[in-house]
Length: 239
Image (tube, rainbow, N blue to C red):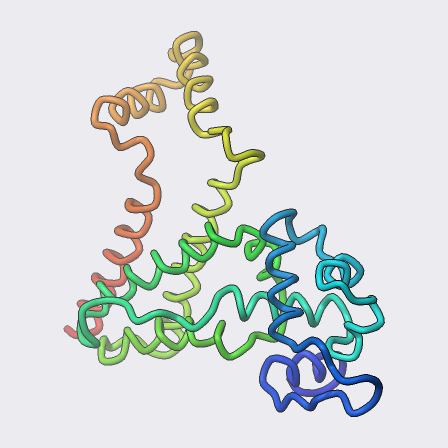
């Protein structure tokens, strides 16, 4: 991981961080540059982040940034690690793996809602920083003593990340005043009124959901289903 094109990303994420030895006295640091990138992504999206725009936000030239960060890829890696932050303590105790994972997943979903651009920045093979890896560490350690092997515990964490990503992605809107779920739900209801005979199961399910008030329960339903599946697997291992 430390060789080739990833070497500089590893150094920036994991240290040590050498101060620039040439030129005028530094007026910036990695934290300030990273924070500026995060603020820009929060406001305008990841696609609008560039070394030029970050430099303008900090009131310096683009060349000044290159004394700290070699390019946009490394900047985004720093932004991801900083925006995610250290994984918070969750659950009611080390032995209560279900509560720990439920709290862990909810905290991750909150991060995705707070910084929607993380959904775009955390795809594909890449170098992860210490704070991002602290999330995986917390999820895997929550399953210690359950009888699941290392691969199964990692897969459980990945499954929960995928659920959080799906819900967060679904919640992204084109504007703060718009509610695409409500509009699409109303449109689907109208379509079923006109064509319900072709989709009887779907029509019945929508009617049942509307009556019970659970049509927007995808997060809790998915989380409960994943944890129930893990509960059954753990019980199987223990017998």
